[in-house]
Amino acid sequence: MRITKKQAAQYMLAYQNLLFPDKLQGKEGILDYMGKVGCIQYDPLDVAGYNSHLVLQSRIKQYRSEYLQELLYVERKLLDGWDKNMAIYSVQDWPYFERYRREAFERYGDTFKEMETVLNTIRKAIDTKGPLSSIDIEVDGTIDWAWAPTRIARAALESMYFWGEFIIHHKVGTRKFYDFTNKHIHRDLYLKPDPNVTMEAYFEWHVKRRIGALGLLWNRPSDAWLGIHWMKSKDRTAAIIELEKRREIMAIEVENIDQPLYIRAEDISLFHKVISSEIEGVRASFIAPLDNLLWDRKLIKEIFGFEYTWEVYKPASERKFGYYVLPVLYGGQFVARLEPKFHRKTKTLEIVNWWWEPDILVSEKLKKALLECMMEFVMYLGAAKVVLNSEGNAVKHLEWLKELLEEQAQHD
Image 1: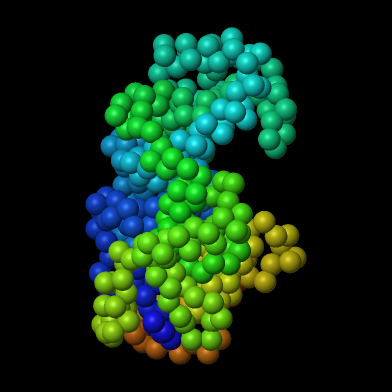
Image 2: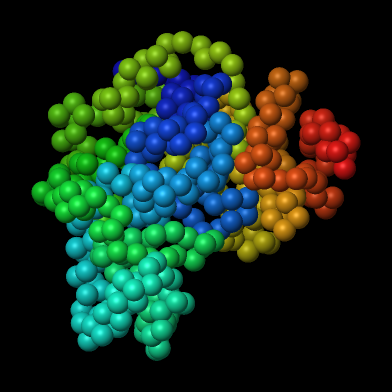
């Protein structure tokens, strides 16, 4: 099957729930999306909400951060875990990561054999007092850890979490509170063995999962494959060959791309629906820096002609755009880049910068879609005010925000 880049772009956006005019609804919409893509990436930076919230606000109508918090820490339908680096995924996926927990025990268990009293002290404290963070554990001393010497209590809690004894009960900001996993995951699920008996089966499962995380993906080195433990290029290729042989995935040829892209068999009906019809109605979306859509940035450059680098860890003098920049989608293309900053104390959304992509026709229809997108973004943040940074370029490029700012001025 051979398609154009425009068709590939249209399918990826439809698959990612970023194309159709209607958004997903509420917590059920979050679960539907998570069931499709497997996981979303978590990052502790909070400039305009954590990355996980930014991913969901672009897909869920009138999204509120409480939706995700409740699914994670009240209803326990989702959990914090390691997949695409730090991530959030369905609790039903717990058994599939058993080999990660075994690896963690083998890696950290010996370290703490000599400190069994520390582990028992932590177990007793949590059993007596309930969920605790590392600063609540009265254990003195430091230990050499992965990144630097750290408190023994923190290292022990993290180790017990990685090998599955503890779960993240909740967070206050980025501060993690831990509790016993078996209190919060049903016994049958908690004890269920890894469905992937062999390493080959595990690679096949995870490769297919990552194809589903984007919608289309090629067999090239990519950030989209990060976090799949033990897998080398030859393992990925072998998994793709086996999945294709079993018809669990299919190869798609795209114009002017010299290797196939792969799609899951269960997504073929949506694929045919999208590429054979014109999608009526378009909307604008602000896309998270670590959004699933952007996991393979070379692929995005090939299909969309859009080059994006997350410059948050670059020195200011080396940045082409800004510290925390969100790509802006409209219809089937990236039209701009937004640098926002939310000031929580004053509930003010500051637009630091706005950059239009080259050759974008700023039509009235585009302005209307962007205004609607911005208003929903303001609601998601709980912002009471929007201001334009006078030192950046926002004032020059955001005349379409006039209606929102005038309405705000009337209320002031």
